[in-house]
Image 1 (cartoon, helix red, strand yellow):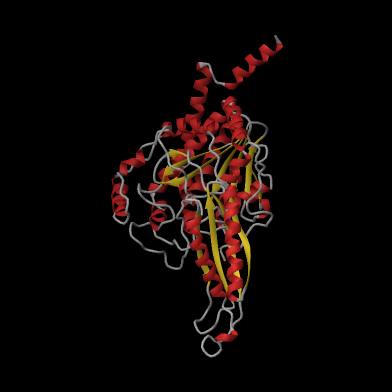
Image 2 (cartoon, one colour):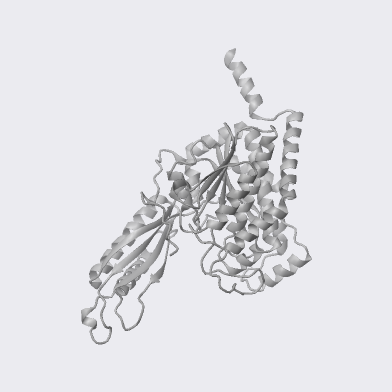
Length: 480
């Protein structure tokens, strides 16, 4: 009899089954959405300031300070400099369970300076730009966390809300260090989003990724009068690149390897005594990434041997694949459909058409107003994200929102331009509302979290998490 009573009590707590409870949740969602819209001018100002800052990974000093001060002003407890990263932080409000986390990013990309206009026009004196929309990402996440906090402050929901300030997603693996430091322990679920050119719940995984800078050391000499006395470090880099390019025929089809030569010498008439090449190795399976990286490492050693140079490497980043949690994704889908897509006004339509003149793909602009159905067939993900490591620590769900004109690729000047306009701001507000409403469901439907944890455990199986970047300290200078 006692067990039956407990079962009945748990069932009542798990679902807001009564009409009164459903209405209470609806009122909370309406209030959260209204609060976000009432603060839209402030949030737009914050996002555009971070767009102007355009600070690259681990250098986001003004961006992180602005987000932290915003959260403090709304009553959050902020711990800065976590996981050995000066620009990382955790802001929290409330106590106890459920504990829901929201991820925020704010780093820009080098080489993508761009004005908020529909033609290529870099900003004079600036190098970086928000080609992945992380200025919108961080601001929307803060807005969602504040909306949840307001409901907690009024006693309408209970638990803990945590905002994770995550720097250097673009190749710096900032979240990996935060996972390694145990910052996500005790969370029941994590929510994230990403700018894009359509509105959809994330149902595609991501590629595991390991990156490193391979450095070659040679002997300098006059390239014309004494070449026999020199040993070219650049030869080492080029020999390594030649061998890894030959490898492409003999690696799994789903694998990706790419590199840039970051140092190649200083003058043609000087045999370079130092050269450096920056590599990414990706595959859907983290085990295969480790194996492929070992082969790339062997190519570097062979190249050094053949050119009379020596080599070493520094691991820069490493991220896991992304685990999809359907229990959480179904809730996010419901809320994304409730919020709806982005409606362009006449000025935004004109801007969008001009942007599309520069693109190879030109889908209907109306796509920004629609939401991709949950059951739509998806392709496998081909990018990488350090959210993958978070997904191994805690059940995680994400959405992608149309902050760019349909057809716009990430990491492009067109994405930077859109992110500096009302098009980006409208998408940001959709993201903020969707995340806040999804969090409300997690607080008021404990059974969803139970199901999510079961699914999460099944996805991980007997795998014991180990960061692909090993024990290294955060690569705070990787953009230098």
